Length: 402
Image (cartoon, rainbow, N blue to C red; front, side, top):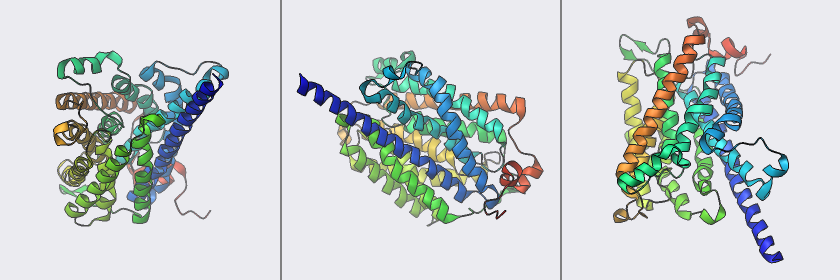
């Protein structure tokens, strides 16, 4: 009995440490979000980019702790510490891990609305999104809430499969961002005489650093989604790798060696492979990532040139919103045994689940940002936007020596 108890305790401790490492790796990805945005925005908005990612994370943690996690999983932490530390505090660390996913939603949105958004109204909107909109869909998919997954299984033979969040996290974040971007409108001076005016990235090395931090952290995002040591799979790691390089190479080719496209290429591939990284053959993952790289480049260029109101600074809608949906569909294709996958997935369920995610995210984003806009406004004044968010909001520039 003593040996059995010791083995059980060791297993609990190992699982707690495993998911804690994953939580820390995903936490580190938020530095990637920050530097990706810092490198992309103009110099006068760099401080604002850094501050937004940090403060969004803070409000997300509080909103998810007190409201969002309960909506998604029906669990709360209003109990004594002795109860919370059962199983070495595994449930607490699981919350930490899932909270870093939830906090990615405002970080995604931040890149789309950069350079012209008010500070506190957007912070309030982030709290509402993480407390209500995101966990509503998260609970539907990852906890079986509202019978949606059971209905898909009864209709199409399998539930919606999203191992690490191509739709639950990335597509939801991207389509929420689209709602916010459309309500904000384009940056001043972005379009002249019906033609787009390019605002060059302020710092390519920072942009590249952000992409690399995100890429490395993503292996915690994907692999650690197993949540326990006995569920870990080398297939997830290699599929993530292959999708990443597929995104890089195709973005290089179709993006004409542009460094911005090349450094977003791995992110497009990794977004897409999240859903089926535990099912696909590595060749399927390579194709999935390659298609995502092309989708990002072509859709970003098309949207910026053709839809004047859709001024998506970092291209978060094509990168997360559309590549996330493609990833879920790709899981339904390349997850099939006939194509070398492990099976147990339905293409129709993947399509229906993706559409549900898009609807929840876009409608939820319109409601939240629409309410905030009606109450306080979302956008800086023309003068504040001209001066830059750094000076207008934070009263300091990125290289101030005072």
